[in-house]
Image (cartoon, rainbow over the protein chains, first blue to last red):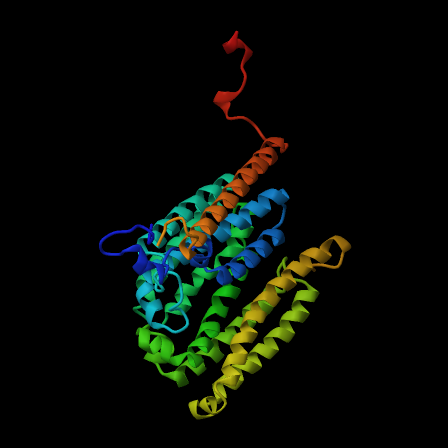
Length: 320
Length: 58
């Protein structure tokens, strides 16, 4: 623990008193990346309620909770490994580890303990398949994405995005104990959504990734290429999103909503594609920022529509 | 500086201890609830070795 209150020759209490570095509860909570966790909780919950069959509400609550804790653990381990990058990026330099409120070793211990805890508890609450998927997700995010791909290839976001796409699959597996075309498509929806979402962010936070030397597409292939990539991935995403509407988790409500959402999202991607840097800098990346904000709503809306189909089902209105 | 003085450090430590306490109490309640749900379900069976066997127990 970073016990700053201990008085030693090197760090007298009077010296530390002006700059308290002791972590509060909120600092440890921040290690779990709570904003990312909202996406994990929501998509896992939708995956769980959309799955055929059902579980006791307390088991469902526990499953979502432990999936969220697993996601949080992965976030803490990510902050432990990426502390050097976080320290130089404006967006992340106030995080607990680079800010010095939590020592890297503490973040690692906290993350690894929560990771093991979440997997074991999910296995006990639901089944071993769901727990295995959660364990794989944490492994994938930390080892494959954070330690390997992030600093090595501009495709980091594409492949690493898979880690964030697993929660609805885990929620589905918590009920069914397996995988199906619906859960794979929900996975694919988040997987294809992640690259345009982050590339739009990279377009208007340009100096951050340059300074941190993270090989984002904007840095390695240029900004024109990034704009093309955003459009291509958004087209593929739209196909996937609409296809999901024809499966058992979709229905007329989902399909109608998805058509509108994807038409608007495609328009946004098209606007980004046809702009050049001169235009973007002239209006301070207004279109890119709007696309980024819209992407957040886009994903929540799609999973919300799946949830709506489930809610309408008892009234004979949901599904096909 | 006297150690008894309420300092930002103490406030942070208190928040951490209080937060951890609440999390632990909630966890105990959750495990209790989960146990009740599991043992109350229709398909609940004890592991084979733990079942009551009148012949073995006499």
